[in-house]
Image 1 (cartoon, helix red, strand yellow):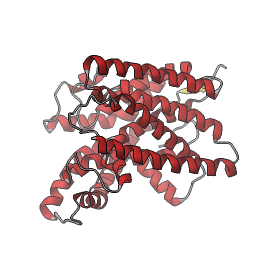
Image 2: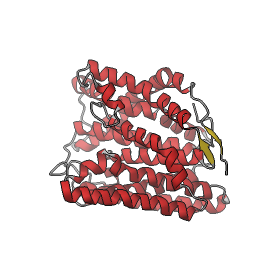
Image 3: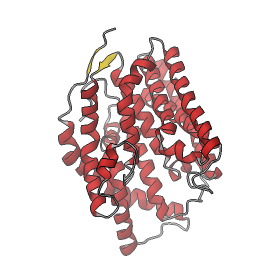
Image 4: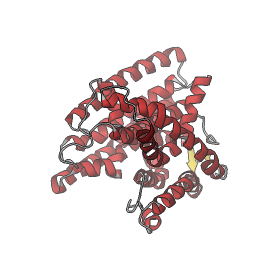
Amino acid sequence: MKPTSGAYIIGLDHLRALAAFMVLFWHAIRYFEPFSYVPAFWPASAFEEGWLGVTLFIVITGFVFTTLTSNREIHYFHFLQNRFLRIFPLLFVVMIFGYNSGKLDPNAMVLFGSLLGAGTVFGTWTLIIEWQFYISYPFLQKNLTSTTLKMTILKCLSFCLFFLILRVCYSIEYGKIQHLSYWTIFGQADAFLFGIIAGNVYLRVRNVRRAVVFPAAAACLLATVVVGSYAFHRMNVFGGFYGDPNPSNAPIWIIWPTISAIIFSIIVCSYCLVTQNFKGYIARSLAYLGTISYSTYMLHFIVIFSVQNTWMKYAAYSFSENPFVTGTLVILLVQYPVVLLVSALSYHFIEQPFLRRRVPYLRPSAG
């Protein structure tokens, strides 16, 4: 079910699917190669270090909220009600599964409600950060959005500076800055804020004559993908997520949330501009993968382990002497298709019945 308000942007579903696949790949490839492995083909580092997909998810969240609520007032409790209906039904199923599998403390539901992240399982820590953004966005919308794009960008950058200073202080006082930068809102806030910037840029550029905006956006997208992929590769060479020691206090983790947020926000904005008129079968099929991406993200933790164990027991075929190549092919040909099947069933039987109960939460701006 697509949003009932605002214009549907097909490119966002493509990018949601990409983000979910990056995270899935990050977890699945660990069966085949050590954390220290760095692909010789440097663009592959964006997937080998697929934890970056979390940042892409959060940039998309900021972008979506901005494009949907532009020049509109938000009914706060209806907004939160819709977000609850979006994430909680499947979250409840996953947490019940976690409890019965012995991976979850019985008090996890209460602890999740504290928004502190205690007792979460199967990657649900990211939903806590997302929920913190849900709570704050209606207020941020009023304070960060200005009548001019320049002022909006300046306000968002100033707020990013606030979080950057906090990360510097934390690094000096406590060390292990990687924990704060990746696992908490104090690092991931940059992604959300740059998503807001990207959304505002998109709204002001999308109606420019296509003969002008398409080549400019395509060139920007290509350049950012190349530069971003190389930056992700250098991060991988530097040690990636599981460097030594872990968590790390390397200064790169102070500015990494900002670097990755800038890269992904440019990719999101330019890709949505390039694909805004795409309506063909391939574009719609890829968009469906984004539609079910929440289930893909939540359920792949459970599914890929069982699929991998079954594969190793009955097949264990090695496609290449390079474990990364073998792992990539197993993920693409075996694990990912099974996860997509489970995700489609989850979306239609768990998510959709609750999504149909969402209510309008936007009204015309008083201004």
